Image (tube, rainbow, N blue to C red; front, side, top):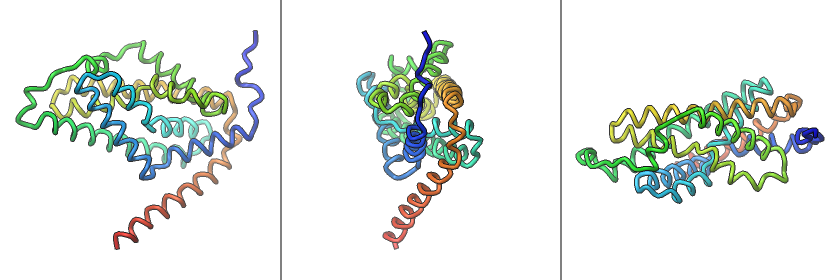
Length: 241
């Protein structure tokens, strides 16, 4: 039986996917706020060994979009989209790490680091394996399909949970805060595995779907979103004055 999931993808669907991807990966204030809230939730859940809270943090995390943006930029050979998405991802990582470190130090002040307890939820993010590579690749396939196929868009929350980008980032911050570099290094490896696995899968899917032909449209959307971001930034600066 022939798989037809990549067939008959209209240019309209591709254009909408490009527009959504670039819009959702623009580092606006609401994007960065969601990063803070998701890492805050994840950190609390990890420290309190509350799996439900950790899962909830994954649902509101927007970090997946800039990774998809990098993959799309690679397929389109669009250096502007790659650099833009890398910048958004870097900001997300920096803000996420800062949030995790701050919340950990509030729970375990510098003088009370010795009281830190390794919870099961933290330990789960300290043992990267080949299974994690497979999960990241499958998650990337699901994420790219859900982005392009409107009828699959409702599956994105489930994809966000399977991707699990925020918990390793939060564990990395926790490890740095309590000065446990075994925790930090293992979490960093898992975080990198997730990013590379997702990116690899998305590059494959976007290539098969021939997103290169949407290259000029991507440039226009980037220009539009950058103007919006500039107006937002200038508006905030004017208010401060």
